[in-house]
Length: 304
Image (cartoon, rainbow, N blue to C red; front, side, top):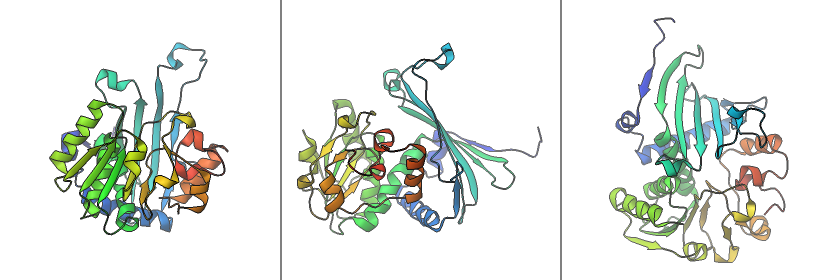
């Protein structure tokens, strides 16, 4: 080993101290990053330079014990090089298992490595659950900044988990009149945690409403956020009837949902964060892509 090679290790408390939970700053950084992506000043994986990453999944009928499926949904590596003012190479590496909650662990456990883009030397290895969560929420925050009604007051969150929390925090950071949240969840534990998060960190929210159905949550909302955990079966995705949606509402889609084709084709405008990423997904996961990728940007044609 060369003694000149050294790097920082940042634990989760270190990341908090460094400002990872500053949502306003996160939204600003994500806006700048989206501009960098639009200019094409980046490189991602694969020959198309737009691959989301490498996902390792377990075979259904493995020959060896070590490759046996154990309820793990996959191990993922997302690598890229960002230009602009960042000039940095990095990779997010994580495993995801829906059974982790039974062990008191997050569903996904993430680490992030930053490298010098010229030499490849490591610069920092970081605990990445928080930075990933706030990054995920920051992108919808950029969307709300430019696409939500300027007088937006009511947001709905379908799926009150970590992504729901950071998405709501981002909406609050860019929508000063937002004061009401409608929540649709599956269990008391996640609902209680979400309400506690709002009361502790988002004092701007004065009215918290727990909804029994998706329709109840969606109706009359200015911002509608879907951050549910879904399986590969499209029929299990939350369904939204276009008639429930308030005219001019922003629908934020970090997760999957089902809409009628009539609504998607004729009654809404689809805005994506990085169109080339969706084209790469369609190339890597041929039609029908939507059931595999579960993201509305991959829904070409009658796949719902």
